[in-house]
Amino acid sequence: MYLSLSEEVIGILLRIFNILFLLLSDRYFLCSFSLRINLHQAHEIRYRTNKWTITETTLRTAVAAAVVLVKDVEAWLRRNGSIR
Image (cartoon, rainbow, N blue to C red; front, top):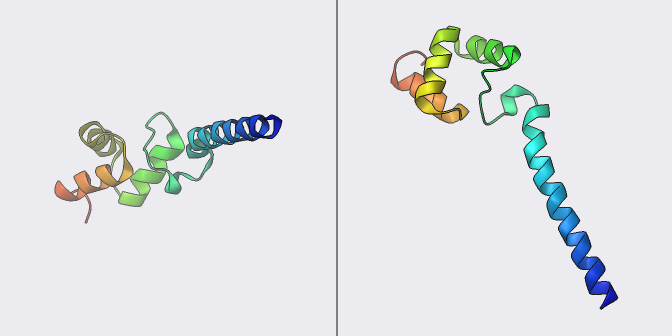
């Protein structure tokens, strides 16, 4: 009984660690690895506008139209002719 309780506690702690890692990892990886576009960070806006050679206004319009996922924003920009 004592061993199963400690195994259960370890399992819970591992799950909590995994959740915290997933929540925090997006903030600390380079923005090129990010899944979302954060328009509140100047370096994110600079990176995306330079990568796709678009204006900040175009980026903000694309994020508003396609939510914030990078793949969706890129697909929206391609559909609208802003990038190739």
